[in-house]
Image 1 (spheres, rainbow, N blue to C red):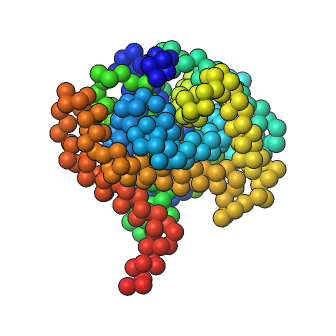
Image 2 (image 1 turned 60 degrees about the vertical axis):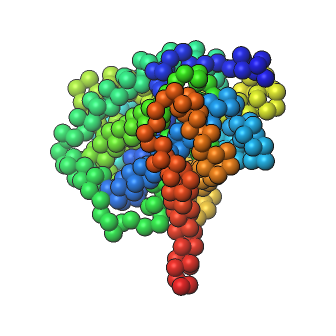
Image 3 (image 1 turned 45 degrees about the horizontal axis):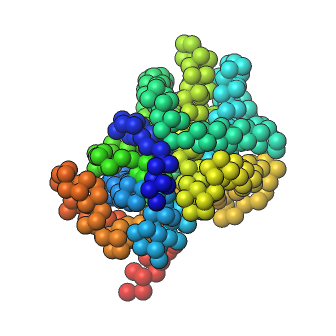
Length: 456
Ligand code: PHE
C-alpha cells in the first residue's frame, strides 16, 4: 500500500492543482459543445436550465468526487472498493463512460488539429459563409483524413499521459490556460462588435420559456456533467493526486466557476458571429469550425490570431483528453497491476478504434442513424446524457448514504482543521436534492414522469 502511494505523482501547489483540474474541465466541452448545444436547444432557455442544474450539481458533486479521491488516494474503482467493496461497479461505469467519451472527443480533437494546420497554411482567407461550410463538410466527410488527425490527437494524449502527472500537466497549464482566456476575450470583443451581433447575445441570454422541454433539460444536464468532467470519476482521480493539506472546498467552487465563465465567453464568441454572418444556430457540431474562421477573417492580423487560437484550443482539448485517459489508465494500473506505459498505449489504441465509427458517421456511414442522430451524436448522447448523470446519481447516493457525509466532511475539512460553513447545505444537496434532481430529469426525459403524473 505504502509503496503504491509513493508511486503516485502529486501536484506541487494549490494553483497547479486548480489549473490542472480546470484544465480537465475546460476543453472542447466549453468551446465546441456548449455553443452548439445551446444553439440547438433554444439558446437562452438552455442556458437558464444549465445554470439551475449547475447550481444543484456543480459544487455538490465536485466536492464529493474530490473528497472520495483524496480520502482513498485511489482511482475511481479502487476508491469505491476501499470505501465499500460492494460498490466498485459504480467506478466501472465511470471507466466505461471514459472509453466512450474519449472515443469521440479524440475525433473532434482531430478536427481541431486539422483546423490548426489550415490556419498555419493561411487557408482561411475566405469570408463567404457557404464556402466555409463546404470546407468543413468536405473535410469531415472524407473517410481517411479525419482518421489520421484522430490518430494524431490520440498519440499526443498518450505522450502526455506517459509523462506522469505533475510534470506533464502542471508546467504548461500555467501559461496556456490564461492565454486561452485572454484570446477568448479578444475574440468575444470582435464578435460582439460585428453588425447584427446583438441578435446572438439576445438568443443566448434571454430565455424563451416556451422552449424549455424534457429534451432541453436532459441536454443541459448532460452538458453540466460533460463540461465539469463529473460523474465518471475524473475528479476522484485528480483528488487522489492531491496532498492532504490542500483546501478541497475552495477548489470545488473555483473549478466550476472558471469552467462556466469560459463556456459563457465561448458562447459569446460563437453565437453573435453565427447571427452576424447568417449561419444557422442549430448547425450542430460544425458550428465552431464554420463560424470562427469567419470571425478571424474580420480581424486585423486574423490569420495570426487563428493560429494562436487553434493552438490554445488544442491545448485545452488535450488537458481534458488526458484526464479522461487518466481515469482509464489509472484503473488498469491500480486495479490490474499493468505498467503505466503499457496501459496507456494499449487502451488508447482500443479507444482510437472505438472512435472510427464516429468519424466515418460524418460521411461514408452517414446513413447509419439511430434516434435521428448520427453515430458520434449517439455515442455522445449515451455517454454524456446517460452514463455521466447516472454515475453522478450513484455517486451522490454512495457518498450520502453508504460512505456517509460525516466521513466526507471530515476529509474535506482536513479532519476538522478547515471550517466548512456550507456543511449543512452540502449535506442536503448530496443526500437529497442532487439525486432527486437527476432522477427527475431522467424520469421526465423517458416520459416516466408524465406517466406517473398522468396516472393520478
Ligand atoms: N470537461 C471536458 C471538456 O469540457 C471533457 C471531459 C468530460 C473530461 C468528462 C473528463 C471527463 O472538454
